[in-house]
Image (cartoon, rainbow, N blue to C red; front, top):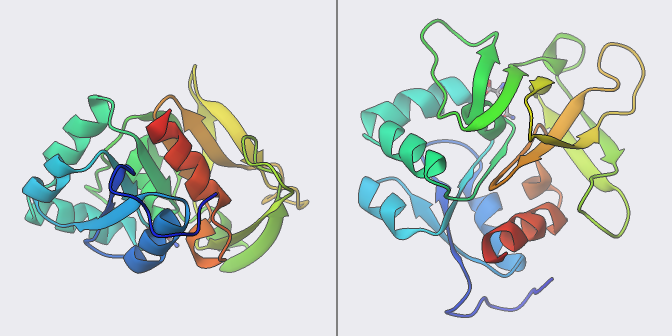
Length: 207
Ligand code: GLN
């Protein structure tokens, strides 16, 4: 993992900058060797090699994506093979199927999973856990969950990378998945200063 300034040949990764923790993702991407740019316009989206969908509030991101005329283009680029990583609200935005959304809420889709919005929120608003994440070497990842969704069903070709270990209704839940060019986590690795999940994503772009 590089912590120096990314070179001009490093992949250009957009961070969807409609709402949510954009700056934290940009920092983590740069620490992982990518170049990061905010994406608010269709022209900016067309220019990037890959896209991060940040945590925040999926209902707001959905509304603003439609207002900024980004919804269809994001959907198209994901369907066309652009690598994308979604954390928390970003996981919701990547899901093909959503439960407990608000009426009319749409996602970009692409990831063959069923996601339950605010799933952990019924027991606890937020919590942290050390998680073993497949594909991330060097010990567990400190995972911060904030009104987080979980993945309730995974389709063929979706690899489960991590599940929660706590007991009770929140234990044994799928919280990190990968499917081809798409990566998603229920938690927020961008806020802990550990950039290994972003490094995994950058390695998916550079292949
Ligand atoms: N509950 C939020 C949503 O529905 C997600 C929370 C988060 O991204 N931290 O979008």
